[in-house]
Length: 483
Image 1 (cartoon, rainbow, N blue to C red):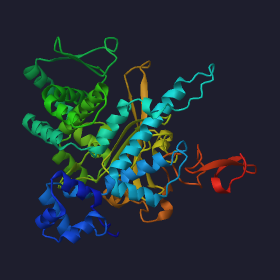
Image 2: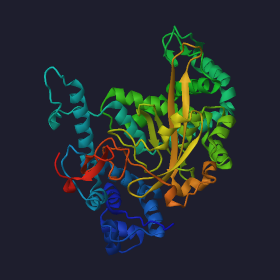
Image 3: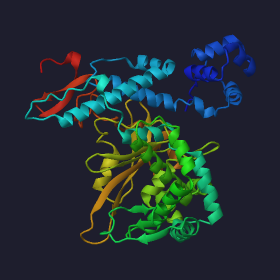
């Protein structure tokens, strides 16, 4: 596979400005000519390995800072925004790439405006009354509401590539100090720790006393847990509470670093970070990554070794991005049968559609037809990138015939170039393009015109009826006639 060239462009200009340096000063510090630096900053010359390492040393950043993953994510977001049928515009892909490369802040502003536009449009449509004949037209930009809390939380974890080294290090130190080696035995240790250090008593409440999995009463020092939790889930909830009690300053610092617009968003981010700490405590980074490599990322074997659930292992695998000790960069997703996405995190540049649902050809939806089985898929995006996906259903709920249960499908995916490291890729024709399933970001923004599974017209086109097949087929606007 050819090595992709790395261009510094706007990132290097921004770093230099933040350090208060001009081109002459930075060129001198790097040991290169000013003209060479000028060419690098204007994308006329790619970064060589020695220059990249020297820039990282002089400016105090990790070499991964210049990775194009974030740029590709932003490009996908911008294409989605500009390709929205409501905008009525069509911008060539090369111009989108140029905006993202040279003017990333402008691109982020356009994406943010589009998010607010769609949020407002959905709220107005939901409130529109058929009796009053409301049109459901979007509100003016000046009256648009702030971003939804869950969207802000998703964007926060997305921006951090789902990895928080400070939490990982703190959890790893605690696991070592407390002698934790498995979630099966961790619950007793964590229960004692809460009692001795925080004077908190753990009560396994009956369902009629609390509908929550975990509920903390700080006034009386009581932590209520559902009695139907497995050992692994019980340990996870105890670890989450310890994070909220012992690492609140660190959690608040991380929350404060984000540009959140509401207290609700901040609370959700804080809970998400506490959950991150819990997973890192039960699956310490070094030990878990070593086991994952040894077992070739066999999720069920990792379940057995660490005493946690399938979904918990998948989530933890998507966080292994410690500098100098990275695991496979995974994207993680959880959906229900209706297509509602309740979790989506990514350590790579895979983009999850925000509007209009995801692609029905994705294997995560096929998992509902084969409960409990691990399914695999080589998927190809419209831009030609291919990914390897693993998906399986998981079930949650209480015990007993009348207990409500919830069923989800979880999926874990990586770029195809990493697939050979996974046990699930054995026997799969990874190098055969014909083995890949063409999928998209969702029908609202997908550019594919040859998909039989479409629910909406392709970006820049519309659907027409084929009278012979009695199906809807996509046609470009410029070649279709009539309505």
